[in-house]
Length: 207
Ligand code: SF4
Image (cartoon, rainbow, N blue to C red; front, side, top):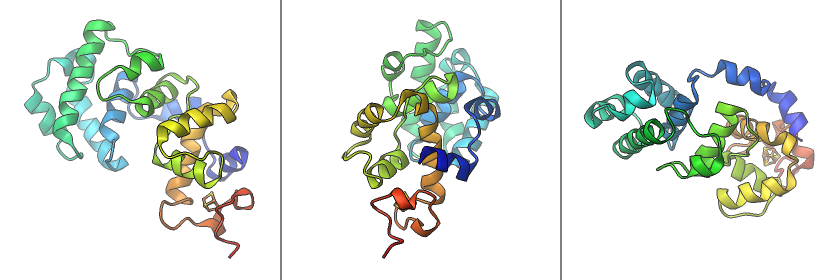
């Protein structure tokens, strides 16, 4: 199924994907991912560009006035809380990690506002380290495929790590997010266009 989805969406290799990411440094990927929660991709991208054009490093963001950060990220949802958290994360990385984003799930997960999903995204997209970040798409599709039977993304992550060989972990998030945005939509999945429909117990195209 992963192979079919890769062919369908012509998923880039992770190296190509990393090279093409607009927010290139691990710190910028971390902050952009924190900003992206419950916000449309295009808004996150524009806001991240605006923020990084002024404060692009842990040191500069840690020392930025909160009112200026809020003004720069105002278009995104929950901008007030996010402004506080990204500045605090910048301060911790500047002071405790010598301006270098940590690479372990444990260290990333301990940063304020950084849960397993964001930590996993940073491992995958900033460092190319195998993790399975589980967002709403990965959670929904894994359950529709009956790969897991879980109620929360956290449970899904643990369950997926048990059944998906580690060599495929890097690509799962990218594939399922794309599949979830284009075909396996939250409300009306396009099962009749789906390249893995024949394997899917939730396929509605049969009826
Ligand atoms: S068959 Fe339908 S429910 Fe199953 S993965 Fe494809 S789009 Fe999603």
